[in-house]
Image (cartoon, rainbow, N blue to C red; front, side, top):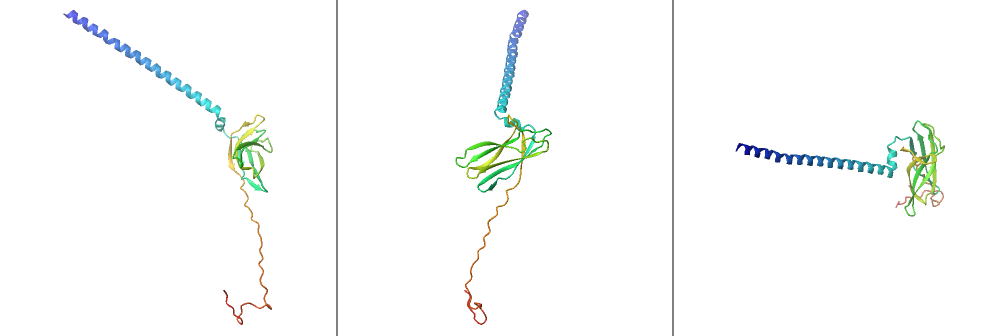
Length: 202
């Protein structure tokens, strides 16, 4: 009897070890799957971030410290022409060569936009040096203009920059016109209303 009971006890211990082994294998498989999923998600996120930076290079440029300050003057309207201009100041410690500002122009006719490069004078700016840009447009052709970029060199490489408001538009002067109202001639230089000849004032 004792021997049979001992056999049964040993038999139960052998059967109970199988679920433990299966549980350990399952835990390893689940851990491996979680690790593989985490690695896949990290790789996909890195690819999406890389493609986003390539698709929008302006964002990567803005992360760089600005090398210039672009001062934008208010548009000046005179004789049916609009003058757009301002100043670019080199705020870096290096020379900037072949500079031009990129403007986005909006047409009045169909509200379409176009970009135009306006060269800087002078085109080479030493550190802390300033240059001007100016563009004249027909007022009836364009409704607005907006600064969208600062380019340099023959390759038109985009440079990071900051902006600031410039000169205000001078106040418009209204033409003065003097109006002379004629008086009816008086008889003999007498007053129309005097103590001797009172008259009712309407």
